[in-house]
Length: 333
Ligand code: R5P
Image 1 (spheres, rainbow, N blue to C red):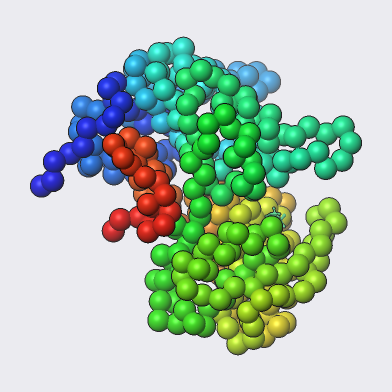
Image 2 (image 1 turned 90 degrees about the vertical axis):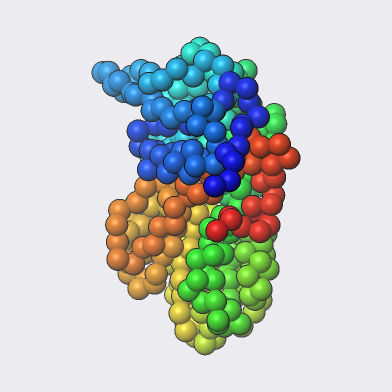
């Protein structure tokens, strides 16, 4: 059996989690425990006691003094409430003596409000990120497919901004390995250009883009650019699936253009409004990650992020570790 690794941080590491993120944190901890020296890694939950009118008291359920804490934090509830509770949790960890904190939040809310797009509105993404990283002990953030890459500039130290293709690529290869010539990766708007380029080039597939016009919740798809879609397997890939108006209109446009199969994929299943009904009505298979929790549906495949997150934590903790190696070559088998 190979020798287990020591972590770089002398105080060891703690995997801490909200109860509602244990589905990801626990398997990530199990995997890391198999690789890292047992004495160097701990696991603990954060308990949240609720009071009147939404007041919350987090309490860390284990000793974190001098350790490097990886806090698995989810935004499965109300985004504004969860954002403030995150700050309380970070404060509790810092005051409990954690020497370093890395926030592992695969989904960060508010990131679509990343500019002042009309008068007298906040840049909400900046408010969340700056407050979260303002704690002295918060040294790093690990997250996935933020709405725009420029958002990295708001962090005082660049986050590990991990791309979703690391989980979508192996799934697509497994399904269509022998038929990749038949597959077109489709961006639902021009904002998806880089993400789709990264996924398609790693798969060796062609790509296409839709042009979208949005007026509030109503979405109109105007044109299809790029590779031909007629008779082919079209895999639409987006960062956020919210009302799913974008995905539903993309599916219709591609079906009308003669696509043989349309599969809808996206990193963050926000699933607001009537998203479940909207997606079910497309008749398409839908593939998302578990950055947010979803209901079980027969048309929905959920790809777990735990192996990806544990690998990112490991690469952050071993000498010469490299997250870009995972991004380029994928997760080790
Ligand atoms: C927008 O630019 C994003 O990348 C998504 O396309 C958008 O958030 C999806 O929203 P919805 O599902 O509500 O159409």
